[in-house]
Amino acid sequence: MKKVMLKTTLSLAVTLASTQIFAAGFALNEQSISGMGTGFAGRSSSADDASTVYGNPAGMSRIKREQVTGGVAVVDAHTDISNASSSPNGGSNKGDMVPFTAVPMGFYVKPIDEHWAFGLGVYVPFGLITDYENGFAGRYFGSKSEVQVITFQPTVSYAFNDKVSIGFGPTINRIDGALESNLSITQALPDGKVKIKGDDTALGYNVGLLVQATDTTRVGLTYHSKVDYKLEGNTKVNYGALAAVGLGANQKYDASLKITTPESVDLSVTQAINDRWNVYAGTTWTRWSQLEKITVKNSGVQPLLAGQFGSINEDQNWHDSWAYAVGTSYQLNKEWVLRTGLTFDQSPTNNEDRSPRIPTGDRTIFSIGAGWSPTDDLTIDVAYSYLKEESVKIRNENNRGQTYDAKYENSANGFGVGATYRF
Image 1 (tube, rainbow, N blue to C red):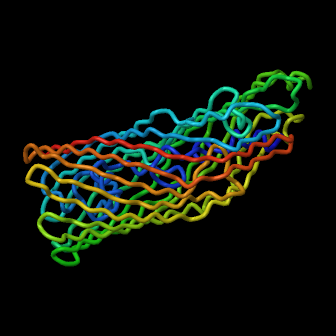
Image 2: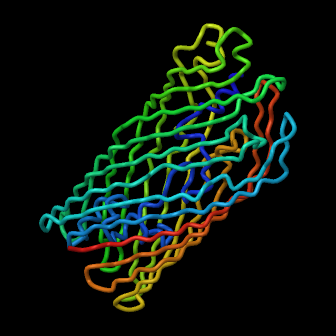
Image 3: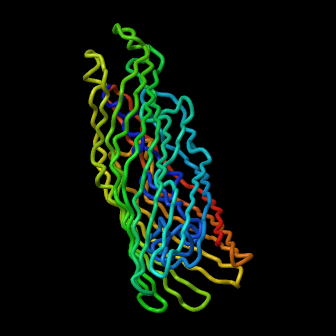
């Protein structure tokens, strides 16, 4: 019973499928449409527009005109589930559990003088939604998940000279989420439902360094801090079997969960080949190894159920991950710039603990994009990315004899459109 309940209460932000996003774990990369076109290879060194507030706060020193950058990325994911088996037998395995998803972003930068600049950012660093069909064979290990983290980031940068600048921004982060799973102790009764909701607000920070190493080479380094959350909400259990032991079929408990979104370090280089060609390379390290264990605490649980719904623990054993990207841009003429990029991204999950909520493996992402500047004041950016993951296997079992084994093959198409307006 513990294992059944735990699979439904693991996290409002953690044990979630990541097949519809373009970064490892449950992180999102979509904070820049111009960066999306190069596979985010130059994220911390490009400083092409106001989205550098996230990519590298120090890059605001390169923004010479007050400007606003905004956009949205949409993701169309596809999952093929094969070789599936479950106990009890039966249930469907349709896959494609990720609905069409949109990720918005917005940034503002204002130069103050030759040294100082100020910026604001609103973006989504973590978040996703998955929704399996009714009757999904793995429903006891996760049927629906929805989460988002919205971040507000005021930022300042300081240029020591025309070679070196730094930037810093505190982050105010709001997390909201909900989970659902089926619950069954005996096949003599219909499935029950467990629904979890919770939220929290917590602080973090981003800091960056940008160095113009030579006339043609620029190096950027960005650190995104971890953020510690304590989600508060409730656990609702709707299950007829509870009435059989003298309790109401509908139970509601206060729930709390401590979770940390990981810190990451992004290092990238922008190299100008000539007046038309730029080449980018970058790597990102994310400290997913902090996610070793999840503990969910439910209060107000009746003594008869305290051992099952009180305090629940589960090992996750995620590992640190690396992403590598290379990209290029070509200035076709005054109005058009063309971009492309290739990214390799490690998954932090492992074969033993992977579940239907996190059926993800290492992925390869190919990206193309373009920027159109009809005037000196306006640039419109578009981008497309195709993601293909290695196939992975799910092997889940709980102490009620319920199992789910399957092979997942995930892919996704991402589309982005954005605009930068300079005042």
